[in-house]
Amino acid sequence: MTNKYRETLISEIIDRELNMFLAVKNRGGTSQCQELPESFRIMREITHGVLPDSFLDSYKCDLEQAEKEGRNFMTEKYALMESLIPTISNAPQIKEIVQIESEWRKEVAAHFPRSVQPDGHESFCRYLGCELQTYSIATIIEYYDYMKSAQQELRNLVRERYELLMRKLGYASLQDCETKLTAR
View (cartoon, rainbow, N blue to C red):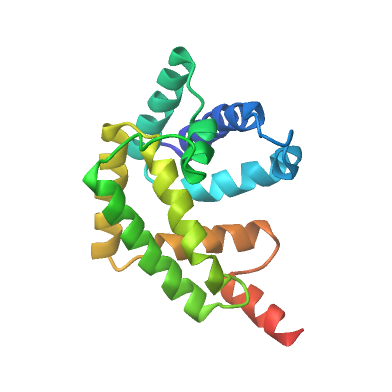
């Protein structure tokens, strides 16, 4: 598939996610992060930017189906994070995906502790595990298969995400960011 197709696909996904995100009803009113839609877009772009088109196609279908059913994945994810609703999915792949990404994140945080806060590990795992529960089993399997493939290739998708983020923030790389933060 072409880069243009991929860019359009990611943009369509983020538009749908952003609509869901902005529709989340928080107990205390609008949250501060809901007032920063461009930050949301950037974070979701780096999240999806390292994943294959097959995952993106499947996830887009999940989002379209959720809209038809009146579901809001963002509301569900945050409710799961706060233990306000019961588990949505017990797919065994979720636990393994979180474990793989957890190890990747620990590795990145150990090498770049100023750029990637080591103490954010627990919330990272909770967030990811709750987000994965909103996916269909087909999308979870796409994600899982890609994680396993990346693992076999000795890739670290968490690092790849941070590399994307640092370039968006104006750094040449994650190492460049770390070097500049260390020099301060």
